[in-house]
Image (tube, rainbow, N blue to C red):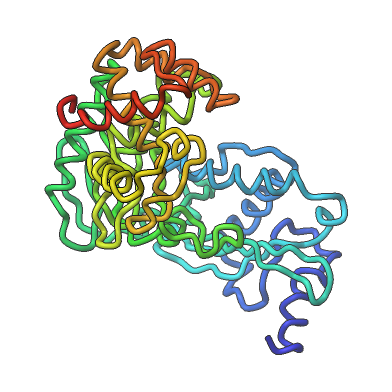
Length: 391
């Protein structure tokens, strides 16, 4: 970066330490101080970020549309603010860099967050994109989800409304719809309705959520997001989000402190899918992983199922580097628990404990099925062989 330009850019954040605003204004922002709504936006933005910096967040500043999602975004900023030391807290690190009208009562605005330390060490942390809307004479802020998807098509499949730019894969959407019904029913719940946004990657999801840039999330692209406020954002443009749908429904009836995540991930793999897509963009299913595991054991006769499970060895990199052999095996075991003990057994397995999760999980599995470390290879190998019969 040009040294003179860097100094100018940096000085906008550090050199204005006498400014009283929580959010300073770039001299390039087209803000008219005689414009009433501009003045309202400026004053309310200051009030909002002053609150955030003191660990408070009044919902009067949040738009009625997508309130929960906006609240979640602002809470994440609040968590950052309360961790700052006294030196960092005294610096002007937020700047309004863009403001323009969408219509008479709504404006699009961007705010940057810097981490200023010394002249050569300033770091851009965030660029936020918010919508400022005049509601009942008051300025409120919200995420730009509706604005950025205003030209997308919508298609309803069952209880899910898909928002998409390209052709919808209705077969995948119907699979998701059926799993929505099945997973909810197994937990004794009514299947819910969702808004499902088909996005190319995680960076696009961030933008829809009001985060144009995040230093900590920079480069992350293979994840989805949801379920939040009945909204789902696709993993790599795939219509089936049933892995996290399992976690969502489970969380409605199981306390977080008790939930064992070896169990949860195994069931999410088995009842839903393995969350990630393969190199062809297809969702990776549990039956496919079982076949891959069988093939691996055939090619690696010395391999131990217990050792694979305990170490969570990476054996599925050719499909997706994130895929877990432990969760694959846990899904096989969960299927047998459900076959023998029904949902009562599944609930016992889920609630076997969050802490010391491997030992907690193995204690529950031994209580339910008699499987332990000593007989793990033999007993799980048997379940693997008869997997198709129990599906």
